[in-house]
Image 1 (cartoon, rainbow, N blue to C red):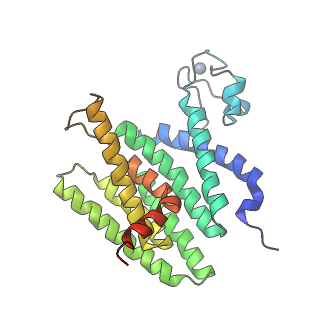
Image 2: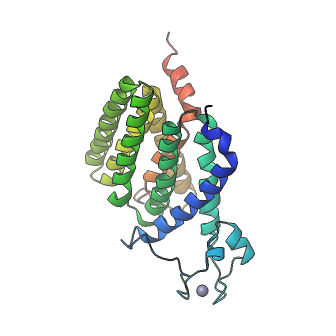
Image 3: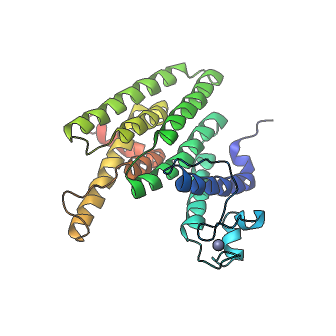
Length: 260
Ligand SMILES: [Zn+2]
């Protein structure tokens, strides 16, 4: 009997929430280079949290958004990040059949959401996340390539990873550091994951990132929240652009085929 990832929806919902909780730990501890394995505590009174307070989303609801010990408000970002992660994790589970591919996408979503939030808040994409993302992605996609005889796809994925990171390196040099080296390293994983699907997906991820970045940049100029010099982190756009490729790639394909 073949057990597809989509046969385990209930498990994935629970896993997605748990991964979301892990994302909040990454977002809180990676920028300050803190250890990841220790008990969670209230950020206000530092009281260690009970296991029941730590249940994603449900803990927040039971406590009505307040610390059990000091009554300080718990930031809404925790349940929000948990919910968004759980919802995004359902995409590959419902979209793809193979375990290797689903796990590669889930890895991208979990580490990608953490990277997007950290880049948004601290304007950097730490190696501590971009390097593991690349290595885990490479391991999982190589697993799929070997198990399903897709070695040619792995080859295209590796070429795409190198080509896309060179492209971002070029933008980095041309913009004199406006695009950071973190973006260049993130591009390795994005090129790998989308290149394994198709070359059009690599283009769709990049078009998506630059389109989103331009729309937000122009909106910020017009709304007065920014000047032309304001640094807008690009990582979140790269990550959202990649996440959307299962839907956007077909448009890139039809645009490129226009003359034929
Ligand atoms: Zn507290």
